[in-house]
Length: 165
Image 1: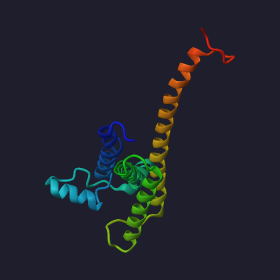
Image 2 (image 1 turned 120 degrees about the vertical axis):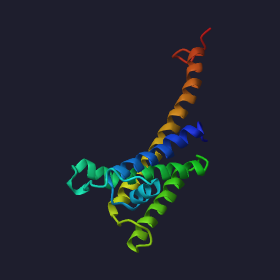
Image 3 (image 1 turned 45 degrees about the vertical axis):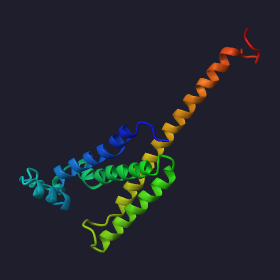
């Protein structure tokens, strides 16, 4: 069951896509997406002179893996929401199949990009993160609903199981 649907879409899909895109636009000036964005915006890319290989390790990791992580997070969450919020396992399977297909298509030059097996690892971690968060929320809701039942029982019974009068 999906509660707070709009909030889930914003937090689980839109924000990761926006964050990944902003990171990409800033520190990936030679990427297809970045060139396309600046071309359709009609503005000059203010970050066009950045050389990613001269950047610190953390920036390179963000460029090569954080964006993929965020986009895979959004993809898995979106698939989960499309499936009605009931099938987290199926969500990760579909998400991973899509990610694997996209990476393999990069080998054939059918889609832009460079094949990187570490992308699959990062995308798997993203999918597992979404599923872990979903299961954590479900457990929290379950415990909350059962806690109210247990609390009402404790009012009526003492430790020996006798009804308090």
